[in-house]
Length: 495
Ligand code: ZN
Image 1 (cartoon, rainbow, N blue to C red):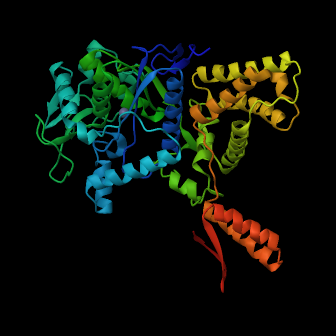
Image 2 (cartoon, helix red, strand yellow):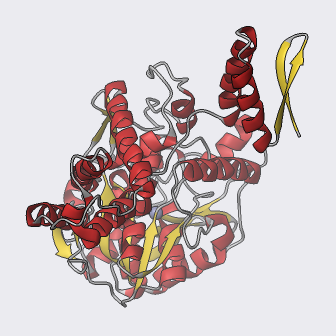
């Protein structure tokens, strides 16, 4: 049942049986963040999605090399070939070195990912640390006759490329339709053809982030970075390329064109895209200004939020929808996720403590056994069906019913038998904790627990309940904490 993983491939527009190029190795590349601002819910959705995918691939026994880049150069405002570099613009705003901006937001991104229990990738290359690799691949595209230099910049030549290959295969667009949506300003462009995209941009005098190249001082375009980094660490043809669906065009289309130009491959065999996070029927995005940062969500400090939500609630919220469906943000939806998450995680705590303890030696019940086996099989079917975590969570709730039936002695352990009980326990823990990556999230800090104890102690003193006072003192002493009666009331210190 483990070998039948199917994935929806955006490139072929169909669900396919997953067969790695070079098993047991799996190469996976996911477009990482542009580090010039705080992460929002849209980022969280993408990286949680691919975190679950790499966790499941590892569970299937594959050796996964997961590469996720950091875009710290060349991503321009308005996502076109013109405009300011987003990092440089932020550096000017904050009066910082561009690399200080990169470091600040990279640290903050890593912190958010750790809170969301997103495992770090195997390699996290920064674009600015791989300029020679990008220059080399641009030169190769020029050598193939598929790019040209113009006034110190280099452009990918779509017209020349179309004679050899088809542009728009991933997005299903063709150049005639694309051209119809483009404004052509004669004589004002360095480009030969309006759809040509920048591989290298000449830096003007005020541009801070610049590197020497065969075409003069400048900086790489955004699309070339991913082709160069993916090829360097995963080879010319690897298994999975992922990212948000908003990157499908033009970014991923351009990555494929660049790879076809120099190595005659589509770069990856399977192209996977997670769908958008919606808010009031609009895409949540930084450019539209309707986004909620993770910091705001975790602290509940955005006008659209009625309360704070923990990182694990957000993780559950993301996973209770299939990654290819849109995910609608609302307080009601998050509150429902909070309930669902707590149910699942309370079950995890119960099942972890549970051991096989039959009250007598009765005969196992074949119906109960086959039901559990069926739910376990359904868990695998769900995740094997293009990582359908929504369906998987529904199946886990079915297993949870049995866990509570055992806990509250509505069903005796002997009716399942030891093997089926162990299967139930193992499957629940595996999917909740290891694959969905949901952890117990204690909301209350130990300090807050201590203040509750102090209140109980003060009350016991008032009531002259010496038995209770001695008990609290003795229990806290075991935790190396000593209580003091001060003029201000009860206080404590470490022993
Ligand atoms: Zn990319």
